[in-house]
Image (tube, rainbow, N blue to C red; front, side):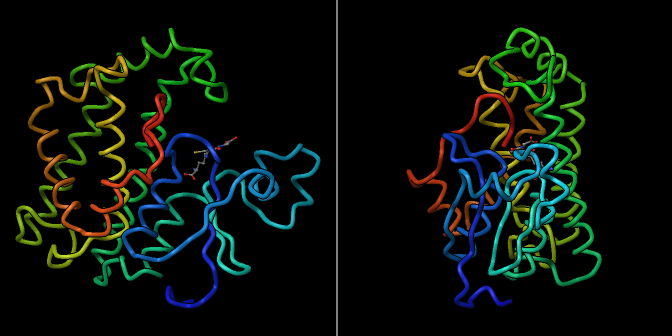
Length: 254
Ligand SMILES: N[C@@H](CCC(=O)N[C@@H](CS)C(=O)NCC(=O)O)C(=O)O
């Protein structure tokens, strides 16, 4: 299926006032300049096992669990990482070199792990319950997650090192991470959103003033330099500067 064909692209996600994992997918469409319609509500619930009674799941005509999903004609796909990879190929945003392509996939799946790692401490008592029911427990768990030299610092250092080693490989110190460092890939779109989400989640305004702590200033400056690189993509810059985006959530990192 070519990205330019006339079949409508649909993105299914919660019709909620936060970006969520749906934003990874929206960014892909926006950067590629491919129109899509966003859907949710009952139609989303019908597609997801997570929102069906247990006795209905085995008779569902599809095999999807939770949003986001995309639909293109009769093809439906779930799992953010799988959708990013699929759209990366469809929209010509996947590296062509096999080793680069594998590393881009590695980056994409490490980001999926990072989303889960960042969400977990905000749901310290019950991962299925709302953050609002566990604010006190979350405050303790997030502080532990973000303590100097802790798990979050390891994740941030990993991404910063990935950026720097890849830039060294492409020979472009301020560039993208694959090929000749000239084009954004789907893995980098995911990294862009992940870094931007963490930068917006771990702030003093939200009660989690960890992004700007001096102990991680060097790593943060590498991550933020990558955001600057990504914002050289005109469609990305126009979208993130627009008022068309949903607000950031308050209890996770997407
Ligand atoms: N690994 C999945 C996780 C999907 C997921 O947890 N979706 C959330 C919204 S961001 C949801 O609505 N989950 C419902 C549930 O798990 O019951 C992905 O990355 O797409």
